[in-house]
Picture 1: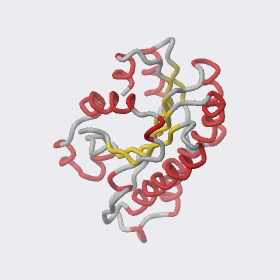
Picture 2: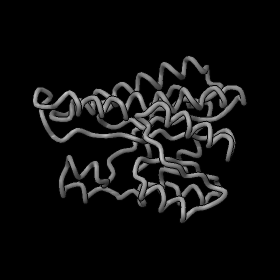
Picture 3: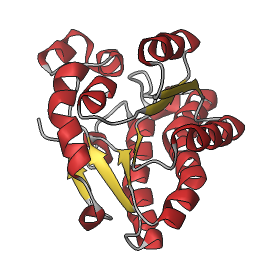
Picture 4: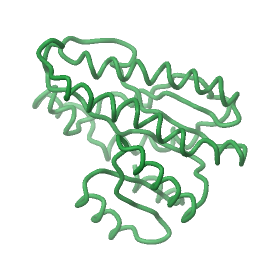
Length: 210
């Protein structure tokens, strides 16, 4: 997505947990883009990232909350409490934290869009991914509730990205994930769609074009 946004003339700010990946992207992009390490499961890191990002590049026009973890294929009663905590902390609490630290500035300015990435498993279910399903159903409800709170001053949208051949998908689908588009292919259609979202989409549950 980063490359597609830059092609359209956007300034990109982003974060991730992996120091190596963050450093690689930071060195490749440089100014005026802003890339910083941040674990969205840690409140203090989210607060620091948002503060630094706003100071450096300004209040965002479009926020994409896409950080997520998925559990190994396993029935619920064979999962550890620690594994479930990690999924909830990133998928739900991380999304909440990012909105809590960005929405005040966006509301004051009076515009912008927040897209919370949901999933097909946020609108349906499958066995052995119950914690992931639970978090993505939560994203759908969270997005609709916050959309009521912003009253459209900032649009809040839940987006099902569709099925993408990522490391996460391969952990669940195995080699069958290869039949789906990779992230670069997906982004060519998804980024123009994301850019098209506005106030009229507030509270909607949308699906990225395939």
